[in-house]
Length: 328
Ligand SMILES: C[S@@+](CC[C@H](N)C(=O)[O-])C[C@H]1O[C@@H](n2cnc3c(N)ncnc32)[C@H](O)[C@@H]1O
Image (tube, rainbow, N blue to C red):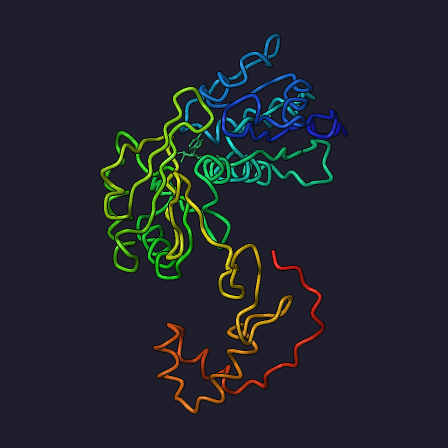
């Protein structure tokens, strides 16, 4: 019996993240992967970004909405023994081609042991490249949310926006607005304003690291009026984020532990270098247990679920280990 065609040849699919769109930010591995490929598949704009690297290769240009077609085409070529570079802007695993490609591969019965090799070549995503252009907005907890409702129901997106706004994350909004989707950013603003100060700093980076790059600083209450499009990433700060000298910065938290005066670094009373804060887990557990207050009162004060507080009140405070951590 003949072996199925998929097992006869050694094709390869490389999911290549191009970074934000400038040659300087294309990794050496991404460049080599494109050089190694027989076939390049991608959205027209991304192919244009690497036009100088694709000469002499088979180039398959697809429109934005043809992600599954791109993955199917890549699988077909790999089955013929070709090396295919499927290119995404930023990182292929962040709102990129990596997910749809694995879905198509799994549906076709592919496993990591089969003869088609798959390599994911990471790239710098819009979130950290745009952050680099505006300062240091992501130096504390952050998350990314796409406002595209092409494949995700709006209530799901709205619930996530509400949760992260409440939880005081720094947020990077991908796909914030397009010609057709103009209301989503207004709804995002509405949900954020329920929990956040209207003066919360916001940075909007349009076409970062591309010839038409544009950076705008604004505030949450004015965010929806800003010039935002398909190629913009919106960075919303947390309650500690500030803008100074044209730079958006989210503090790392050192002020909770140290007073920095005239170049000297002194710990606040009750705090120790290399140890959890006095309000860290153990200190906080001990203090709420000693407070004698009810789970309901503590839940309201700390904005945490009452059943969680009740469980913490019933847990023995663990002994703290040796101080061997780096504060970073
Ligand atoms: C489908 S997502 C692709 C994200 C990409 N895989 C990444 O990791 O950056 C497209 C969105 O990424 C963001 N984006 C991509 N490139 C950008 C750039 N150069 N400047 C600003 N935002 C960008 C925009 O929010 C855009 O709507």
